Amino acid sequence: MLVANNITKSFSSEGKDVNVLKGISLNLEEGDFASIVGRSGSGKTTLLNVLSTLVRPDKGELNYRGQNLTSASESHLNGLRKSDFSVIFQFHHLLPYLTVLENTLLPFMSAFKPVSKQIEKNAMDCLGRVGIADKAKRLPGNLSGGEQQRVAIARALVKSSKILFADEPTGSLDKATGENIMELLARLHKEGLSIVMVTHEAEYARLARRTIEIEDGRVVHTSASEKNHTGLTSS
Amino acid sequence: MNLFTIPLKNMRRKPTKTFLLLLVFSLGVMSIVALYQVSLVVGVSLEQKLTAFGANIVVKPSTEKLSVSYGGFHMGDMLLDVKDLQETETTAAIRSIGLNDRISVVAPKLVTMLKIEEVAIAVVGVKWADELGIKSYWATNGTFPQQPDEILLGSLAAEKLEIRTGENLSLYGREFRVSGTLLETGSDDDSVILMDLGRLQEMLGQPGAVSFVEVAALCSGCPIEDIVAQIQTNLPKTSVIALQNIVNQRMSSVRFVQKLALSISLVILVTASAMVGISMLSSVNERKKDIGILRSLGYGKSRVFMIFCLEAGLIGALAGGVGYMIGFGASLKTLEFLTLADGAKPVFSIAQLLICASLFPVITILSALYPAWRGSSVEPSQALVSL
Image (cartoon, rainbow over all chains, first blue to last red; front, side):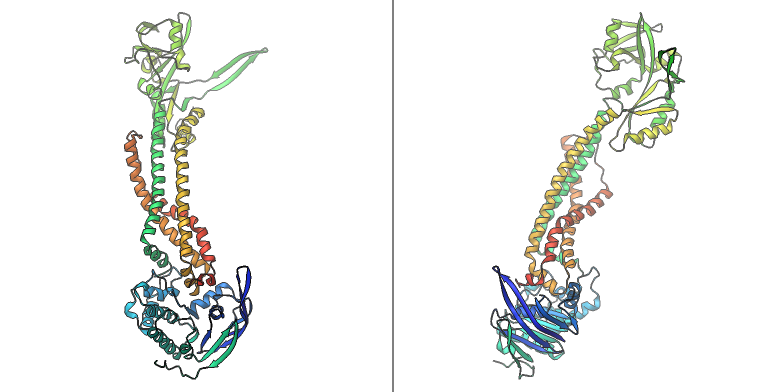
């Protein structure tokens, strides 16, 4: 479904070019759950940003369902991010001045035409699926970190995303909340959602169907998980 | 819920900042509206006062001028077919033009020449109430005539005739008392005898006849050419002439007040717009994270640009409406306090209110263009660095 071929990306830092990704290739299948692991500065987040089209690669090719995204127009990529791709971050997933429901509906609020009642109902259903329908009218500031992450996940669900890109989704959460989020992701994956997750938590990485280990901008190891994505082992 | 929700909710998120920005821009709009209203009323009032310093339109009979030469000698110009105007018809025609509210004073005159003890002198019949309306700068060493058998002498005429205030002068066999002598004006009025129009018409056996009519028109609301054209239409057989030098002189005074107000308004507007621009620029810097989230959700550059413009536009619309109301009130108070308008008051206009509420959003949007462009140019990757 999503194929990255020989992706390179460098950034300028203090006048020098720093090669962050050095020819990474990977293939994400429909319904896949891949975790990207590696040490800090290894290029995990940059890879996730390239895969989710938030950053254009310097070289290499990114294909999604047969479309070459490397040379695609800005508006085409915007369209993909609006419909097929969703990204959740470690912090600041939500606009603090919009309610939970409004944040969930944000992808549909980019026009002057009001969001339809049907979409609003879908959003409420999705908030129900992640267990926070009762907090739909609250502002994000009144939610816990775990609840905020759930809102971001609900936002991905309401637009029927095909792939969810998660950048350290449990990084700012306590263990119990992190586990809850991971259980939620595992459940959504079972329901058919493809997930690419960056994490440095080995236990959560093992939940994925396969783990891609990155070091110094290169894939050094890929392994298939032995778990069947049913849940976390209690610790 | 739509695109408007984002800027609206963001404005509510920081009520103090939004309030201060609204306050600054509303004060700007208020000052501009107040200055505009005050300058308008003061301009009209000033022009009304200036009408007391002379007419700016002259209506006279149409004539044909013929330059006569014979045998190599130039015999001067001859006026053909000169017919006096009829006082009642002429003044009524002038008063009935479409722009009649712009007509301040209509002063008819009958001019004749006569010899008094070998001194040739012009006698001008006037309607005193109208004449003093356009010549309030006249001053006399006596009084202005109160009775038809009283006359006023120009300073040079009095000198030539060697007659003083209080003495009698015989005109066409009738005795007139000189109620006063004009102090020197530097104009033609210094050389004439001024008397009651009706009495002169009666003595000349020309009831209702006038040689020309002077008109004082207010030109601030419309060009003098429009007034002249309308009088000409009503009086086709006359010659209607605008005294452009007087019009220009008078209008320059009025325009000075209005230009001053406009200049100050522009300074205020630029300052207020700069405040909006700076505020929006800081808002863009503060909201890079928001921009990153929006871009990650598929919001294009144009949508991000629009969000900032909408926010600026909402501030402009609110400040335009509120500023107009307060500015109108302020202009009333200012005119009352400074006693500038001689009772004239600014007129509340829904059209002006709507213009303010639609023009100022355009201005705030224009001042937010650069910040909005900066915001929309932020690449998702740049914005996401802070996430």
